[in-house]
Length: 592
Image (cartoon, rainbow, N blue to C red; front, side, top):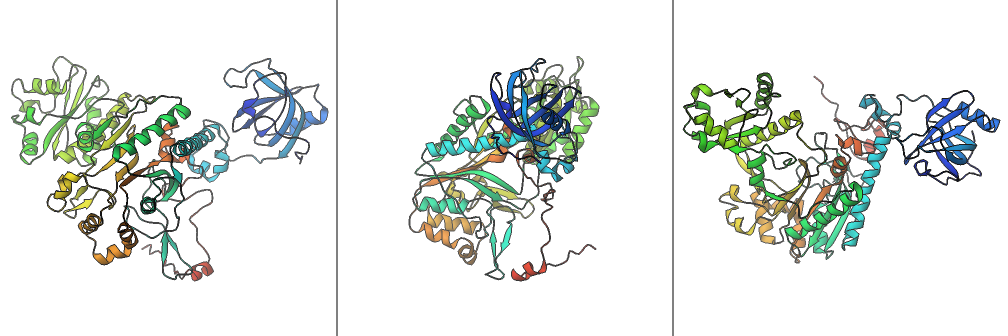
């Protein structure tokens, strides 16, 4: 095997753009084409590819080395850059080639388990098993580099704006934050455990009490929860906290970051300030607290319009305190045939609906699923209310308002995708404000906290904390991009008595409060500045910027749905001695 002695890389492959220079490059052999008297090797590194050329004027030893090369060999090459006879306009280096005078084969490769190509058809499981090979593919390299650029711009922006980066502990106390903790046993404290942080929430609040008024951290977070396309058990937050500010100050700071990020990484100007919707408006118009606003098709309340219609489904919903609402899909009648509407109805039933009513307007007379219950003029009133015209489809649902909104919100997205009306070039940011402080748990017939217990309620709502929890709104907000929640933020409680009251409202006894949060409660007794903060999901942000379908596409070594990593095959068993040192016994799984 050759060595690098005497050679030092002068250029990356993608930087070889001009003829008339001598360069040294290194990388992986992407393709090797041996035409007999001439050999072409396309060399690849993380910046792109460049063509290496060998012909009958090449030194014989160098030519024979080139002839022995195969895909994925690691080589270095020195040579003169010249214009290509057959140019390739599809790549930046397509006008030039390197006529090689010195070739070194640094490492030979076995035949790879799948071909290293941009558009790989290999199943993901095999690619994840050999992730280090999968990462050689240009699309994944581009994604990982873009993720790096997001992190770079974040650090630059927050440093420029007076933030101090402070690392918080990875080993911390287990505290309730909404998901299961990953626990780490302590060898020196038998029977006791650290928790990996679900977020740096408590520590960053303590930093505000400590006087660091602008904290930031690219923080690793861990949550033991079921995985989805936009979820991994370990992820990164661009985490910040600010003192002597209000909600708008924090939101404007984030807007400045997003403006810089999209200008530098995406090459796009974001219009500021970002639009805002209250939680109530978002639910009523879109049926979601993270609405995708890249298309219309808003939910419309037609309860008053149909209140006198003699249709038992509508009447029953209204009499039971529910509502009747609709979405109008423009120019959808050809796509949404009766068969497709039946499929939509089955989907709606699968997520909690009893059924759907519809109007499909293809011919002069609209086809209405509940037409036989209508008196003269009632259908026209409904169509006028929702702005329906010939060629449109109207989907109507009647039930409890909460069920109606969530179901129509889901159907709105399904229909938009099928109709192909979502503009993938858009980046629609949105602040969702005035979040509810409590959520009603119908299973247990009780109110539960919608946020972590340090979230400040709005001053005018404090009076309802004990008597009318449904009226309480939080000084909390979400940042949404194209229907994906990027971040949640809030102002924090700084009043000791109010914080104690919040713990009690969440059903905590004094002993439990002292055990889980005693150190934080004590800290607030020594005075705290008003403060708040938020954490932006770096991985999700990168996923959307890269137009990727899954967080795995922007994560170097991701986990799959059962939280395992196929490449290293973790989690894995450990030997008995390690378990003994940790005072742990593994109980065999009962598979009966």
